[in-house]
Image (cartoon, rainbow, N blue to C red; front, side, top):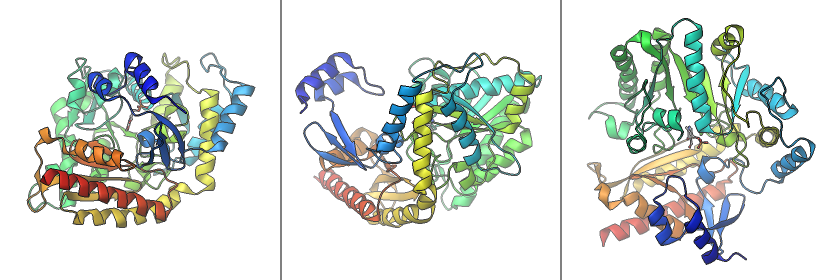
Length: 457
Ligand code: PLP
């Protein structure tokens, strides 16, 4: 058994948590998570919670998978570590790179034959900035430095990745963004559509903000555009169907690179190995992390498309960039075992053809709730807005922290759901049964009811 008070006192005395108000946490005491199995986690008091967030969008194959522990154990005994800097490689890193290349769908003859490894999504996006700049330097266009990103997009927390991220509260700390990173508005239909505008019309108009920004910056100065297929941490913002094809048309028109940040969306979460396939666009670089190992061990990286790889390899000479853990053998071995599970259990296809549509039908029913607007899902991510007046779409006063109120009821009733402002979001493990989806949606409904009751009193 765990002495909860003791762990909480160690925690508040010594552990500075990420994205946390330290003082507030110390006053409450952190919830101590002690074990997990399947789609459930347990705290030190013995409470079971259905983890509808897959940890932090990552535990795609669910908790307690012995195959992954075995793969780590075997690799640690054979070769726990070796670097990949000085013309050395290792079996899992090379094998995984080839595996990822084979899983990435080719579009219009473009393929991804190469992988650059890191240990996280943030590092991978920093690597993207380095690779993009190197690419244009090598092509004799060093003035192409500007990377365009989106408000409320999330690309990580290191200096460059936090700059790419479009959260103003992140930029406010640390004097960000760094130079040559600029943002456009997000394709959030609920918030940004004009009255009477259809979703398709809005998608085209939202993509047009990219072209306007390119013209404002100067087309010869723009290096790349980066976006998440579906914005995750920003609150599961699902773009209209017209959005990505129009973005593709615009990046093609100006010859700029397209980076698809699939740290959340790849490896089956949207029903495909990689999400660019779902939305029909052709990125040059694809960021991955999280689901590649189902979060069992840190690993991230970038799939590097032919256009960039060719220049880096043939014209680049030494690329002065990399990490101690690039191609870590244990992380890569766990990733291979994880992808093996995903393949043998057919998870991307099951999300696409069965689990995703089933979740969508159940989740859309939440739109009947008096507190809810715009409940929708895409594969195995879903979001809804908590509204004050369903008829007019009037929002709650942000000072009410209505999302946090709802999250409190979720925690108290055995459900992990995330609040992003007044949006409630989920990204459940891809291994759910229909009965577990029913159980999750019933819990969401219960927590919405409790939130509504509390707001009324
Ligand atoms: N990119 C996206 C789309 C993410 O969702 C995240 C994390 O949530 C990151 C990048 C950063 O990844 P990490 O936390 O592994 O650095």
